[in-house]
Image (cartoon, rainbow, N blue to C red; front, top):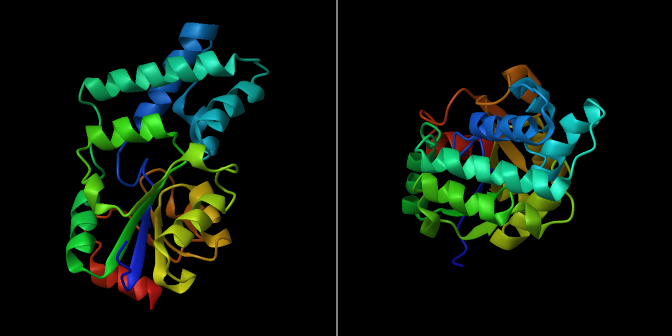
Length: 223
């Protein structure tokens, strides 16, 4: 990896890919199919960004339902993949353009740090035609022991890009993701694609969309 001046570390779901509604739908359908239970997207909201296991276990615990975790995750992934195959996944506005701009500038190392497991990350990035070759590092949820809000994944990303914390900027959409980045002593730009700005107040900068975020915006957050 050629070391650059800065590093830009992206979460995936809700930052690069507009998948949070699809993940909720896939999970709702799984609970209906396997357990005859009707949940809503709001039931899953507290668990956004925490990884697939917690995402399905959390709502189940709240209603006192014991689930077969392996089977639940299999069906959820099948449902999610079907939504991708149907063409329902899109990049988040401005995300791919920002990745390309940062890569082309010659100043930024690029990384992805997602709580999603590798198989889900791969199909998601493929669905949005993400320029995966532009990323120097991709860390997925099955590569770490502790999921967000624990800082492990962002500490691993920062170590992998090989730059000091002061030169690394995380882009997140989830409350747990912002907490993870800040606990790793990293600056964080939060996008209100999944939560309100008031929920993301720990972030160093909050934007409604990446559409109008420029490299100057990113530098100002760091400097």
